[in-house]
Image: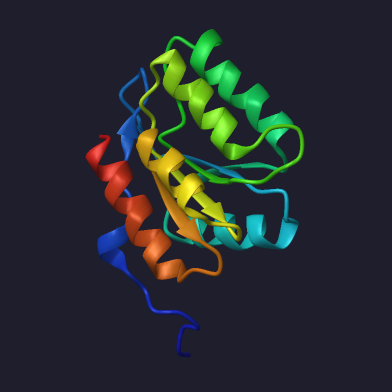
Length: 151
């Protein structure tokens, strides 16, 4: 049987170790208010071996990020993939809060409304910006590269 999509073993994420030394998959937060887009991105990353935390809107993302930044002694999210425009808080607002807290987690932003101002703001916060629609293989490569460089 032929797979529906090609396999990219070179994109398998490097695992991290928990406090007991056990290998743990890299964790990626996917924040997207469109359920179909969120599921597509999350399922793609899961197939590549990542543990994925799905967040349906900016408000819930803010809660998760706040927990990671301020309540946790060890950050457990290795990368964030977020839509720019979401209810409650935008992806850009949350990335600003993350950067202001000093957390350097890699961030990929996705938008269907990319303009020069959005691109400049994302770049200024050291985040990649993908314009929708985008090639999932390009996203997969970016995720792998950012997670690997953050190891």
